[in-house]
Amino acid sequence: LAQAVARPRVLWRACRRSPKVTPAAALAFAPTAPRSREMAAVAMRRVARLSQQVTSRTVVDAAAPAGLLRCRAVASAAASSKMVEANGRSFLVMSTGSTGSPVICMPGAMGTAETDFSGQLAGFAGSHQVVSFDPRGYGKSRPPVRDWPVDFYNRDAEDAHAIMKVLGFDSYSVVGWSDGANAAVILAARRPEAVRKLVIFGGNAWVEQEDIDSYEATRDVKKNWSKRMLALHEPVYRDELQPMWDGFCDAMKGIMERGGDICKGEAQSLKCPTFVLAGAKDPIVPNYHPEWFAKNIPNARLHFFPDGKHNIHIKYNDEFNKMVLEFLAE
Image 1: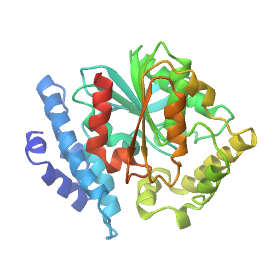
Image 2 (image 1 turned 45 degrees about the vertical axis):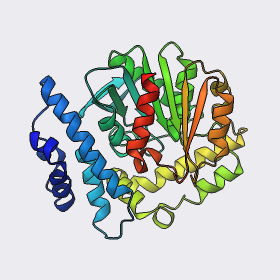
Image 3 (image 1 turned 180 degrees about the vertical axis):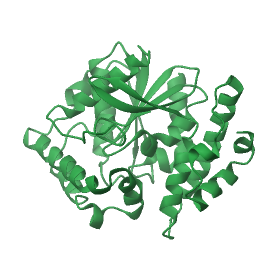
């Protein structure tokens, strides 16, 4: 563990070079003592920072996506991982940090705690008790696989709240990305007594034809997804990836056919301080969506990353984490 703190690049290189170097082997010392937890948090932040250097460059070699995946795995290696029974289902839950106010990070469509929030599990751990999870039907919160009832965003919100209750947290802040941002808004609106602060990015309070067109442009995962995205999700879902993404695209069309609203009313009723972040060049969520959130959520602020796209918390990990931590500390 001391080597992880002092020489994180050694771990990063090893995990990129060899698939046999697993997170458990790289950080084999279970961080139980207070000093070990502190060292683990430092190691996680330093290795996560190195992983973002890979993310921020154009990857041209075929081995790089797998290396990036292993690097992210190392960044979350010191997180505790367990199955939690909540709201009638079993969820894979990852957590870091032992002091500070609790924060739950809600993944986006097809996302998991590890694929979507490794950088925050590492980056927030020094000052918060950080929780993320594989949403119902995603990642290791299977079987069964994801389904799409009319109220699936409300269900995701209640799942997150139930997980935090089981973990012993009655009050917490919420960080939500993409689909997780939509569910996070609903959670904050339905559970105002529980949600202290809200951070959302990549979400949309409604869908219209432009949104449907962007989803349809990505429907065929083999043809339309980037190599990096496929490398991220194929190991998790394998043959289930295409039908699951078809289900998501069809669910979005269904929402539009029912009028398009996702969480407009909930957003306008929020009571907690809210931080809206966005990538100005997001190809999936046009700028008018975060702008609407900022104008219609009481006590909200907005920040655009001028060159950011949909994954601002990954592309700009250090800056993103700093801004969110400062907001949570206010």
